[in-house]
Structures are given as C-alpha cells and as structure tokens.
Length: 211
Image (cartoon, rainbow, N blue to C red; front, side, top):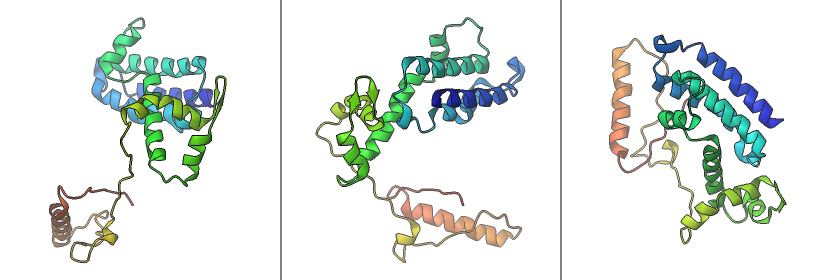
C-alpha cells in the first residue's frame, strides 16, 4: 500500500513537470533533471528507511516511474535503453539510491549515545526469514559501511548558534526578510552580515535558516 501510494504521488508530480516540457522548445534538460530531483523523487523517498525492506516487485515499480520520468524529461525515444538514459542523466538507479539513504539514516543513529532508544533497537532488532524490522534492514544495508569505517569513531558534530556565542562575537538577530526602502538601513544589514561572515570564515560552519 505504501509503495502504490508513493508511486501514485510521484506520477502526479511528474505529470505537472511534463506540462513544462515541450520537446526542444521547453526547458533545458539540466533544468528538467533538477525538477525531477526536487519535485518527483522526494515523493518516492519520503520516510524510506522505515519501509525500505520492500519486495522486489515493489522496487520495480519505483524503477519504472523513475525511468519513465527521465525518458520524458530528456526527450528520449520510447525504446531507448534505460541504462543509457540513467548514465546520460547522471541519476542513480532507485535501488542504489535506496541503499544510500539507508546509509544516511544509519550513521546518525550510530552517533547517538548508547542509552538512546534507537541505538538499543538497532542492536536488538531481528528478522524472520525475509521479513525485516526497519532497523534490522538498516543494519544489513550498512554492512559495507560498517566494514569501511571499522576502527573509526562516529561522532555527532557540535553546532553553535548565534545566541551561544560570546558577547564580543555576537552580532545579534538581523531582520533582513522585510525589504526596506531606506538605503541606510539596508546598508547596515549588509555591513553586519559581511562582518559576521568575515569573523567566522574558515573557522565555523554557517547555517542559514528561514523564518
């Protein structure tokens, strides 16, 4: 049911993208690929670590949706090789993308404390024949990653917000979202931002948030 629901949403999103593309008169292929990655693929990947242990027949459905979308976007012939289309577009096959997303979910879990509930579930999860618990499937998919990082310690990066900085480093919150007709106020905003970036360049990670 989850597979059919995700595939249906991806098809509806791809139909909207197709309206923007009209052969050589439509959007450039590179723009079409970006639209695929931002508007179509997220519907197929939403919460995928939870249900990634789907059967092969369900996995084929996702592969078909991705291939058909890429065919239409680049204007390939109906009987073009799907492998060639993927190479030209530079888009990973869905099964490879699924494994990559499992890697990304597995790593943050491993970085948590031993007392964390997800870590405990990861160590105690089981499978019965071909039926996997979600975390057990992450374990199986991440065997190669586990071997590659053997002997390494995975740690969560510590981030520091503006409010946690010392008073001499703190610039304060700048309300730059609202456009201003006063050029003096705008220039002060720009000056404060440039000062903040210059102060922390190459020494800290800058995170820009919306709202």
